[in-house]
Length: 166
Image 1 (spheres, rainbow, N blue to C red):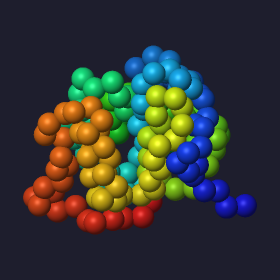
Image 2: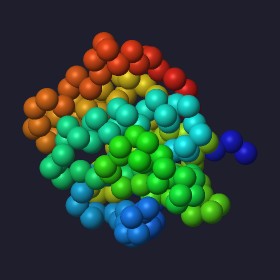
Image 3: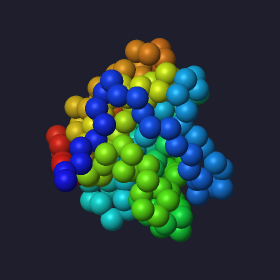
Image 4: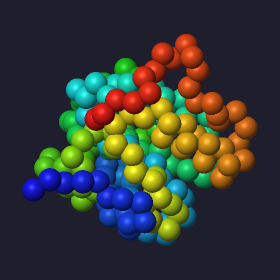
């Protein structure tokens, strides 16, 4: 049976996970804040490519009513090392053994990103690394939160590929 990630327009499954900082975080419908969920594994080359740009985006929208959560398919210790390596400043939440949250979201590949709106509906799903998708996300955040300087997310010196499958 082949899984495919939940699509835009679908209600996001609710969950509670404990972050590497020991804080419990829950995604609940209608909790008032949009949330960007990025599922990853620390051995995934495409995840290694994606996370510096997610951190850049997170820094550029700091102060906006928006949550960034990284959902890790690794142990707490491995997830902590990953976060330190990339200087990540948003919460990292290891999925419990057996990946119940990853399975609820229909993951087949990582990275997979879901933008969940304030009402608990998936507004965007993207799999792998796509400059166009990440730039569109940055543009949406700039528009929605009226934050100047969010875009362009990429600069020529980044030498980032146009896309890379997960």
